[in-house]
Every structure is written in C-alpha cells, then in structure tokens.
Image 1 (cartoon, helix red, strand yellow):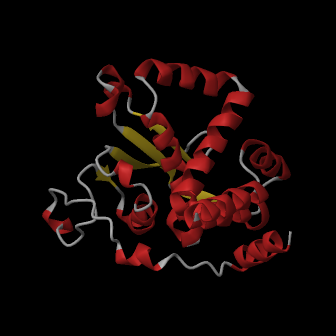
Image 2 (cartoon, rainbow, N blue to C red):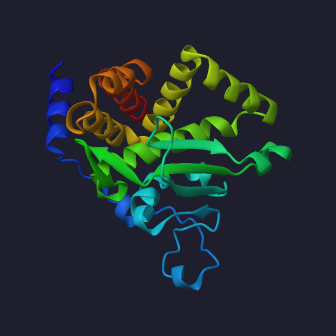
Length: 228
C-alpha cells in the first residue's frame, strides 16, 4: 500500500519524467514523402500526425514497434460524442485483408478543463502520452481481429456495457504491457482529481477502466517478469 500511495503522490505533483530512451528515439519510424519533415526520420509515412500533438504522439508510438508499418491517421475533431479520443478502423480498409487495414484516431481539438475550453495540446505532456497510448492499445487489440470480428466488436461496443468495460480495460493493459504504465496513471489521476470533471463522469471512468491500483500491480508484475 505504501508503494501505491507514493506513486499517487508523485503523479498528483506531475513529477513524471519519461525514460531517457524516449528522447533518444531509438525506434526509427522511417521517413515521409513531405520534404519539410526530412529532419524527422522517426516519423513514418504510415502515420499522419497533426503538428500540435506530433511530439507526444511519437513518444507514445515509440512504445509500439509493431505499429511501425500500420497506417494510422490522427485527426482533430470538434466534437467526439462522450469521448476525448477515439480509435477505430477506416471503413473502406475493412473491405480488404486485415493486414492492410488502416486506422484513425480522432482527437478532440479542445478539452473542458475545469469548465474552460482548453486546446488539447495544452494539457500536461504525460497526460497526453497516456491518453494517446491508451488509444494505440485499442489498435493493438484490433490488429488481432478479423474484419468480421471487428464488425461484431463494433456491435458489442455499442450495445453492451460489459463489452465496453472489457475493451477499455484491454486497451489499458496493452498500454501498461508496452511500458506506458506511468503515463496511463498520470492520465487517470488528471481525469479523476484535476480536470474538474463531473462526479457522473468520474464514476463512469472508475467503472469502465482499470483502477490505479490494478495498473500498478500490472506494472510490478511486468518488472518481476523482466527480472526473471
């Protein structure tokens, strides 16, 4: 319990520092056709990322080497129903082989921070990395599903609370298992304690997603497995 309380205290103060390999960007994501981006070799031509969130998105992507060759487009959206970000396959890509599927992550352009509209890129870096890392966790989950399974997934997500809980917790688990645990915790602490969300929304988050205690248990298990 002492470990849990120490972690939460750290996150509330946002004394979170990304591991040094984030900044070294050891993962090389290729280059893109745009000559203006030639100095950023870690950006893949498979990833279309708005400039405002490029840096935090690349830090999140660096944890998912399997997504290096996966087509992902990040799009600002003025109004995402009941969400801040949303990951889904592009419909037209569902007509071919699952290996060729492409995805879109919709990102709300603004966030209601304590009742005030705030550009999403102005949120704390650790919070954005965790949020994007969670959405990338969804895409990791989608990679293993056939096109037909994705159709059933969409139906289940729209019709079953139990299904939504399972999907969101799976995405959290993917993110934690790919080394984003600290950032997922930072995002949850921000939503639950700092963003000024309504009590109804806070209870929804607690119900749907993994709790901070479960996330830290996953992180400890991951460390233990790596030490074996």
